Length: 158
Image 1 (cartoon, rainbow, N blue to C red):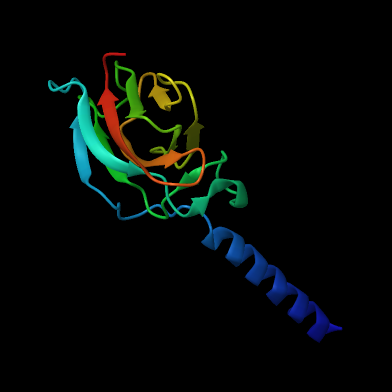
Image 2 (image 1 turned 90 degrees about the horizontal axis):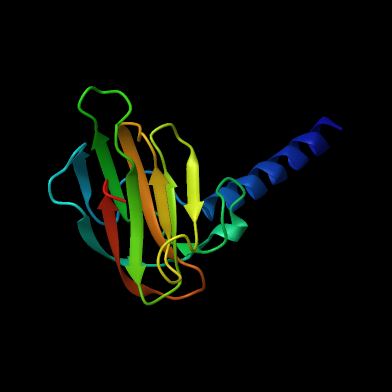
């Protein structure tokens, strides 16, 4: 009986492990890691990116959304506020592309945020009113399979 339980537990762990292996991983970005300071002068900041990837979010139980993203974040943005507390600005991430894009962001407190079409045309946009300082892991994905040239814009003016 104990042996059967151990076998069942091992199978469950392998199944859960395989599911999470198909999920995005927080860590070193594919692209740049950079710091954005509250009230930044060059606004918006624009970063070129290839949207999409091999990870199908619909197969990942821990992350919201249905779309395709890369395994690692496209960018890591360290947001610094003047006093170390919440910003007086709304920090907005948006995508410009000819493709149907999505944004997936893991915020400073480890919470996942997802958006498909809140931007212009079929592009994604996520806004953080009174943004918290800290690390924002950012994935720029595509709604369907395939890759597309895109731009990530970061602004406090929208």
